[in-house]
Image (cartoon, rainbow, N blue to C red):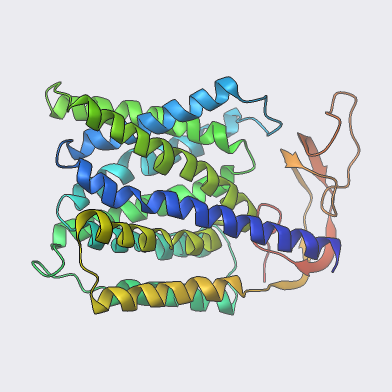
Length: 356
């Protein structure tokens, strides 16, 4: 296997592992949040979830060793602002408002709409390429979502509830694609900013709606603990997955989140698994399995590019160092990619956005 092929296989495995781990942590959030909604209003709960994430991540910054990742810069501000607005503020509020009108099981399965929305944006607006296996995987995921027939009184859902969760998924799809563009920066820094701003904003809005009344302390602590895992650790792992495999493929791996949520709903909320739910899960799982089989390789051109990120001196990073550049690998510094034409397996990461 060539050096490029080895890196591809390693990044594919890293991306899959991190994406699946992020999905499992996030998947638990819907049924557990459903339990908390009985005591905490949706907007306030969204704020507390992100405040919990922010608390955990800023604590990590205080005790962790200095990072070698590339820092956020001024040019990243507008993307980061949209990430916070769409993924940190609008998405959670819409999801929790929707969850207040549907069962935990239905809400968990509907969250799988995030995957096709992410893929559509990635392909149509952000120039990611989908091969036949990846395209088939997307079709299976969408088919799985379509199998879930939601009717008032049947699975505890109504049209506004479904629409609110679908809108939340659209917000997170935009968030995913914008975060992918930022993912060469320090993922912990990205999520720290997102969690703190989103948490403070939604908590303030929630307190205004609740007229300053806080729920019992045990529920506040429970919400923040859930947020530290499902909105903190999960989102950091997801940012790394976006770096390695791109937004479209990460979305398919993250589609396993509703499986975890649906199973947890059966245990925690006594929701029943019905035949349509099983068929939906099977179709979505089949889509993820197809994605794991994808192999994409052809001769391609790397145009000249200047940027900064954590890297090793592999086939794509052959450049001279200035006097002040860091020693040891991996390291981060501003560097230039010279034009390069070669052929190896690859995914649409930051170095492989090209015409097909």
